Image (tube, rainbow, N blue to C red):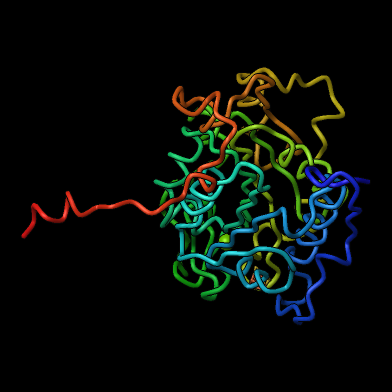
Length: 296
Ligand code: SF4
Ligand code: MG
């Protein structure tokens, strides 16, 4: 298999291997997610030096030094603007950002809103385990109502954010949902997300055996199904919204919506549309004396 810009190089899973030991709790969904991500990058012919892997703070972020390649570990809730900037500066890179539900729909919800609207060319893997796992099981914006968490022993009283409803209402050009226990499904969806032109939102229903006791691995196993094996039309936004709604009984997973005509942010810019150069090719030294001299 050849990589996406060097014509002959073959990429294998071993190239993404790291000597650092994994530190997640036994049974954590993060193990399978990282395996599936490596598989998808390899299957897409992306070598580690062509991938920019961006991590938020959280249990998922603790995987940032457990995979090889270019990596950036950002501040809590702030990884999307970093990833968007990288994608704008160098379109040759495959940019993947990872963050949890706490970072995405709590501290960083404003960034999520604008990343979706901007349609930046990023694959965004959102680990939704319905709690802040790294800081010991506090309720997040996606924790279900009435569920008792360490921060809310009498039960959560706020209405949870429904990630798919939010993303699709903002005009997401790619919105998918997949279960962390389904490695083959994650591989398939991640590949489609990487190949998508624009912001590809992948919500991963991640089990957290340590702190999320209300939707464990078996709970999802009994409820998820692959909507891409039905007659679901992935180009129909209204059908996607309807299919995504149920998160309690029959939980649809797979690609819920994809705009086949998606145009990413940088290609929408009339100034840059027909330019072959990347922003990084245009970095040069500017004389700013005329501007600073006014300040004396
Ligand atoms: Fe995984 Fe939960 Fe442990 Fe974090 S706290 S490593 S999400 S099982
Ligand atoms: Mg979380």
